[in-house]
Image 1 (spheres, rainbow, N blue to C red):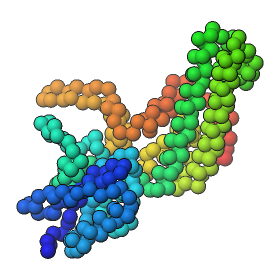
Image 2: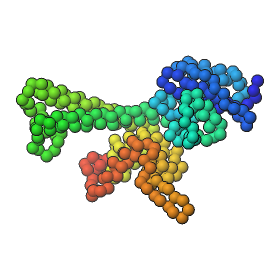
Image 3: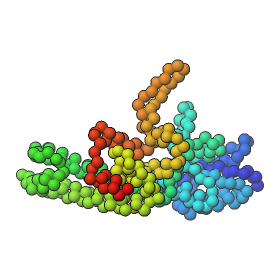
Image 4: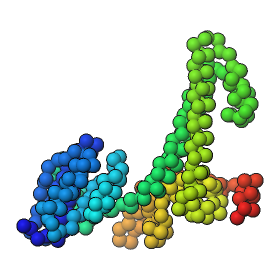
Length: 317
């Protein structure tokens, strides 16, 4: 029986199966490929129990790459009392001459790098925080879908040389003008009515998600933070809620520099010797949070004004 104190287990996760490899601590131990299991919860639990029975005196340390399958593997293994780490695939070290990539090699590589403590571990949000983030992203997706439907309608009207003489698009007057349009061919009229129906449906969907987000965030543990950052110009409720939903617990960033690196707002640098070259921002990390911050920063181009909504918020505070 092996008396190793730690067993490092690499998981190469996929939709239908996981590739497994492990390596024992100690200089003379090498990585061993353990095969493939299905991606069901029961198979993962059985795999962890098999390792525990094989190494009863050891601590199991699991690692896998972040991907579309989410964090349920992390939460399942930690609920069983094991250590688990999720790493960023884009930050894994890669040898320039290594041109062979297989699931087996990926699992063994993860186990070996975890043993060397050379892995960029990422922050795993709490289930409640991830749920708020999903709702925030659903609202943003609904906004994009609505804008896409509007662009399709405007392109359809442009192809038929139908122009609106007013100034404000999508106002009440513009929508009334759209509903009163009569196109020369019945087929085109059907297309117009279907596009208007799609826009109305997506507008209602966006309103529902916005109302739900406002309700859920007020019961969220980070609601005081959402309320506090609205004191800055250009940040109102929806932007503040979406930004904190993407960033999560801000205390996990030790310094502002680490937060800026996470947002991809630090400049590129290529310095050597006495020469220092700075470029544009790196644009790495969370692109949704970066877009929200840049969107809010545009308000600094204009003269500050207190809208009725902001006045009401200030009086309530």
